[in-house]
Length: 261
Image 1 (tube, helix red, strand yellow):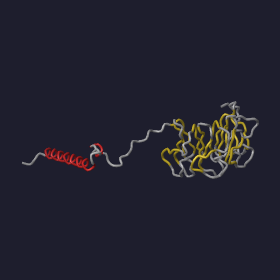
Image 2 (cartoon, one colour):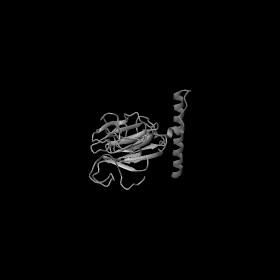
Image 3 (tube, helix red, strand yellow):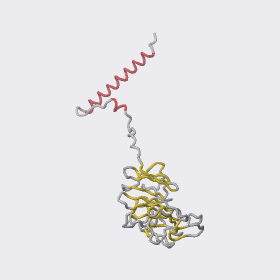
Image 4 (cartoon, helix red, strand yellow):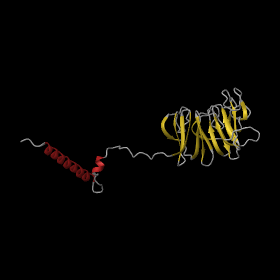
């Protein structure tokens, strides 16, 4: 009579178990008395098994501009992702990243601000650093050399707030002064000239003190300590809000309407 299929299965299982135990005993004997035979779990684990996934990043804030994004985690580390042709992600490469990549250098940040092809950030001790494209001096380190990792802005001042634009960057110090650097062909630096700067220069105005600044594409706007808005730079679409159009402003002009922000 032909054996039942289940009996065959049990016999095969018993044979496999016996073979496995024999292999274990042989391995133990071959390794000497000081070694321990591998467990069944160790044998079952495939070589090169993937490690447990890293803990999820927890962000305190994120910011984006054009085609890349950066954020600061709850442990004060900066990560960026997206387009990276000029090193604006700050990870030491020009490789695009579809997922967050750590900004190189181990700096601790409290804020980051992406521009079009560069990024700037403020460390937890209020120092300004930038990375990425630097053709117009937008990194503020005194050069026009691009960098794929953070470089210190050439200023002894500490910044309360920072904003990266298309080709320039601006910040507000703890003395409420606005400073800008980078591209200035349209007056976006607000210093009364059209000359680009590779180091921070003060925004000119009648004793203006600022609470916050925002760098755009060839223009800049800011809120003063009384809540009034001021803008400067290119105005081809009326983006300065002073009631005119196509009139560049090389120094801050008030936004009309006496609004408070």
